[in-house]
Image (tube, rainbow, N blue to C red):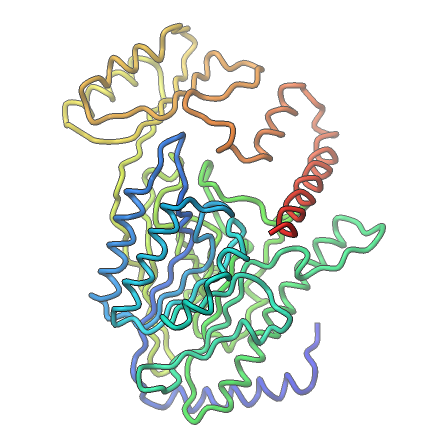
Length: 436
């Protein structure tokens, strides 16, 4: 893909400006990058509002303690497109608190879980609190490029606030196109969108008396990114995850703040391209993984990046094994007066008909609460949900895959069936979006 001549000239001017920026002492700019809050999410029927309340309290304190200038939230603010009243209350109370702090700006982009129209609805009002919302792709990519100013009215940061790019935003549908054609057009669309946003950011930077850093945001799946089972990360596009390479991002970017993957990580080994990860473990698969937000200090053209651990507000613990091992582990935790939500995976040839009753007896009068029981011995080939599992909380694709397994559909037929099913789900999502 080649950029038009005028865009190339803008990038050259930007690089010249950046040489000045590199050699000029400027006031350090402190940024916190977070994402994937999933406010309103529950875990096997247990609401997690108290955890989110404690996290937002902690984050607000952190912004003040670290003297943060800008907070970036890269998508999936809410867990679904119709947030509960309590989720909304947590969200707006937090934004009001930040508006009264030393943090100059909050920039929030939509993720694939968010309703773009819901996020966008109060954006004109929130702008007066220096909260900038980009819920969807507009008519012009310039609408996603923000010039943020400090308390004195001086430019301090340019943000390419790119929201989750939906298939319909970046790809035209053609009759008879193959899966490979769709994947290629998706990647080309994402690449072009970022190229246009970064070019516009460079134009703004070139017009400033003193160059300021450029930060980009995104909600996507980068090539090589890692996730864990049960972390709630959904596929983004029909037929492909459309994993993008680090090469789609312009070298003019001083820092790239990404969302979607719940595990903190870099992109392509590039330190300044980061996923902050989700602040709470989304499932038992993340029980022992550290959660973080990322602090970025931009000064003299350099980005000093560090991860700040998020406290654990609710202990999750998964126990796998036979009855002897499980009972001993429960006794140990009970003796130590551990308070935790538990997942029990019983894995043994021995049949225990009253497994749940024995488990409830083992954790009685303790701070242990069993949210899920999975009995691998009794599962066989039947479509079973673990105790505590709720159908509405299962991913629709996972349910379909279980059905394929139950009916023993040959593997060579599954890919075509899964693709057709994904197309149906995508059409349903599109109808929901158009109805908003």
